[in-house]
Amino acid sequence: MNTAIIILFNIFLGIGVLVLTTMSLAVIYGFMRIINLAHGEFMMLGAYSVWFSTSLGVNIWIAILIIAPLVVAIIGVIIERTIIRFLYGRIIDTMLATWGVSLLLIGTVTALFGNHVRGLSTPLGSFSIGDYGVSYYSLALVVISFVALFGLWAVFRFTRFGLIVRATMLRPEMAAALGINRDRVYVMTFALGAGLAGLAGGVIAPLAGVFPSMGMVYIIKAFIAVLIGGPAAITGITIASSLLAPVSVVGSFLASSVVGEIALLTLAIVLIRLLPMGITGRWPRLSL
Amino acid sequence: MMLEIRNLTAAYGKVPALFGVDLDVRKGAVHGVMGHNGMGKTTLLRTVMGIMRSSGGSIVLGGMNVSGMEAHQRARRKLGYVPQGREIFGPLSVRENLELGCLAERNPEHRINEVLETFPRLKRLLDRRGGDLSGGEQQLLALARCLCARPELVLLDEPTEGIQPSIRDEIRDVLKSLADAGLTILLVEQNIDMLSSLCESVSLLERGRIVKTVHRQDRSPSVLATELIDLLSAL
Ligand SMILES: Nc1ncnc2c1ncn2[C@@H]1O[C@H](COP(=O)(O)OP(=O)(O)O)[C@@H](O)[C@H]1O
Ligand SMILES: [Mg+2]
Image 1 (tube, rainbow over the protein chains, first blue to last red):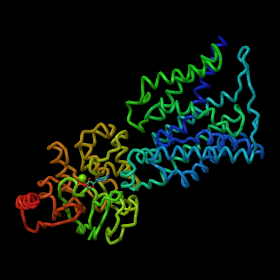
Image 2 (cartoon, rainbow over the protein chains, first blue to last red):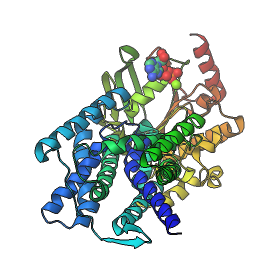
Image 3 (tube, each protein chain N blue to C red):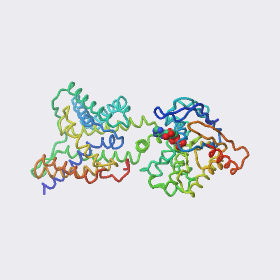
Image 4 (cartoon, chains in turn purple, cyan):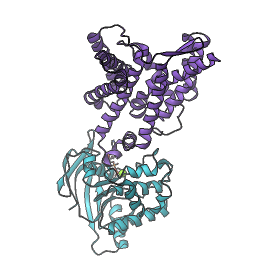
């Protein structure tokens, strides 16, 4: 019984982590069609923002929920204005450029803070279910992930900003002819995506440790989830995460975490074979 | 004049498409542009809208030179665009498509209802996805979306292309009533009946140049139609 509860909880945790680390790509790749190879480094910057600001005495929740997304969103604005905006519609060039950004960010952070793992104490403590210890923080992570996911969906479903972004990504020229300033929409959307990566990095920091190359762990799975999700990116990553995470958790439980990873990748390959356009492949792009 | 175009040139990369267009549209007039496929009609409208950069010449809109402005700035100066192919936002609902025409409105809901008085057919379709509408319905939607922004000059690119005759008549009637209400329209059209029944003057665009302009003066639509047909077949 306790084991079942733990497995169930780990499944939710797995879905939460996957959703959290993929939302940024749902915006930057799913909506804007930019392959951001610096995704993991955006997360890493969020994590460092938390580590750095808490070391200055800032409350950890403020650091995670406000400072990390804000710092990375601002960095996103700078990167969009100086690099990305010259490369819209040129997929290979953007990949190379963002790869360069990723190396630059790792290098800069290593030079500034050194190449070792900074630990953060996990807030909130823990409780036990039978023989298993569960941290309240991982519970909080699940809640934060789902609230952020719902919030993202709601922004695009209900707000004027969301409507303008979707229209601009669908038909930039028509949007401009309706009075929309395309450049501004692009920079704001990229900043939103970057901010989500910052949030993800900040939330994960206390669990994963903070180090320059920490983002690499997440980027592959995040791209897998967004590709399997397909053109309706937000719904897509939700369904994809809900399929992939349980397989990985159950695999880890039955055998080992390596087996869990293999199970996840196997399922991913099967899904891509069966549904090459993604789970939401029949939906129009940018539907919700 | 609502619109004065002088010696306007535009090119796709190095391939020129407009070779010095001169065109005047009087305030309150419907001015037609006809010409065979590939002559540059769409390019002309895209360049006037600012979606495409001009390579030379000038565009003066309501007395202001807008040649250096971006499309969204021209839109805010009350220039409206209904493109060829309609460019409906397919995954968005009809209501959301209309809201995008109301971005400068204080009360979009109210403005949408106002505009829909002219488009009763769209009222029942508000919650449908734009992409699910028929071609004719999409054309009405594109026109309604444009009107939501209260344009003073509307650029209209082949509004009846590939549209079933019943809706074509509806579109013509809507345009007629808008023209009677004083809206200025630059109408690109290949359908002679549309041109002769709506336009005060019609220009013929030929390989990126205006080669002739016919004014209605006191001619009846059928006389004007015959003249336009003669003009086209003389090419
Ligand atoms: N996107 C484009 N790239 C290159 N050439 C184009 C493009 N669009 C149109 N053209 C060329 O410009 C010329 C004018 O096209 P267009 O303005 O669409 O004509 P029309 O609307 O009168 O049919 C044609 O020769 C066409 O081949
Ligand atoms: Mg055309």
